[in-house]
Length: 87
Image (cartoon, rainbow, N blue to C red; front, side, top):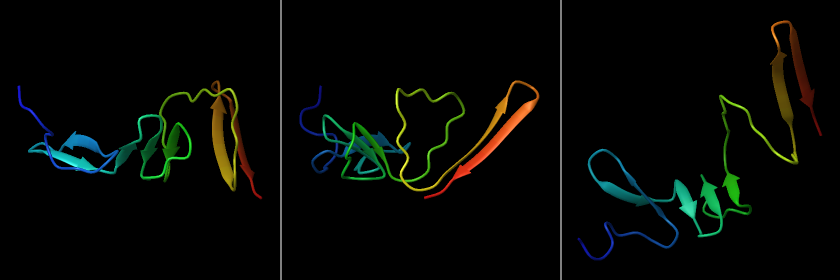
């Protein structure tokens, strides 16, 4: 097979294919122990700079919130709970 890198890049960049060619960029930044999405300085195992959307369940043993949080939940077919917490 080929030798050397597929494309030129810098430390911790992630390769992706744009449909035509391979590109090395910082959209997903991988230090080997931490991954940053939208950041080149991940402070946790997974650090995301920006909004997160999930269509399924999010499971965690603990949740820390810094700043504003708002949520809307529908439980079963009848109960809807909306809440907002502010600093």
